[in-house]
Length: 43
Image (cartoon, rainbow, N blue to C red; front, side, top):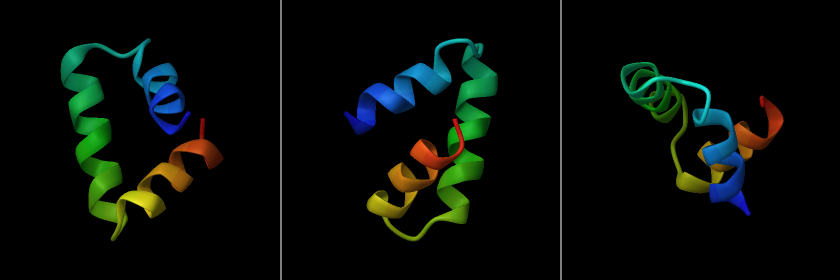
């Protein structure tokens, strides 16, 4: 389900925008769980 949320967020973005979004978000979190939790909070 976490991947579904991530795909839903990334779908409207172009490739570069999606990559930058992911990199920025990954820099803000320490773990994968924290990363996915932040995705579900900020759709």
